[in-house]
Length: 169
Image 1 (cartoon, rainbow, N blue to C red):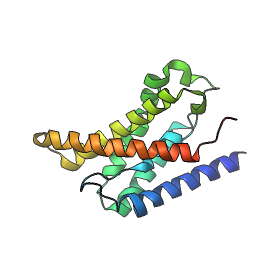
Image 2 (image 1 turned 90 degrees about the vertical axis):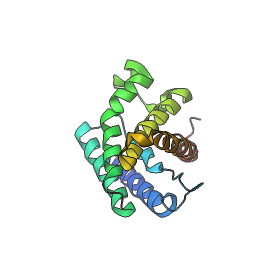
Image 3 (image 1 turned 30 degrees about the vertical axis):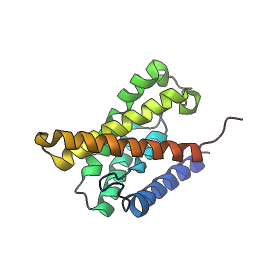
C-alpha cells in the first residue's frame, strides 16, 4: 500500500512538471495569461504526511519548474510559501475538522474544495507576480495578472481535478 502511495505521488510530480513545462509554459493567452497547473500537486498532496518532507518536495517542485522555465526561483518562492501556509489555509477552509485522523479531502463539500484550491492559487500568484514585477507602482498590473492568470489556473485545475478524480460510487 505505501509503495503504491509513493509511486502515485512520484508520477503526479513528474507528470505535472512535464505538463507545466512542455504545454502550459508555451501557452500565452492574450499575451500574459500563463496557467500554472503544477499547483495541483500541492492540492493533492496527502494531508497527514510529514511536514518537513512536504516542504522539501514543494521546494523541489518549484526548483524543477524554475529550472525549465528560467524564472530565477520565482516559482520556488511562491510554491514554498503556499506549502508553508497550507495548514493555515486548510484550517480556514475546513475548520478544525482537518486536524482529525480520519479527515480526507474527498469527504468535504465541493465548495470547500474549490475555496481551498482558489486560496492556494491566489496566494501563489500574488507572491509570484509581486516578485516578478517587484514594484508597487505597478500594483494594477500585478492585480490584473493575478486575477486573469489565477482564473485560468483555477479553471484548468478544476478540469484536471474532475478528469482525474475517483468517483464515489
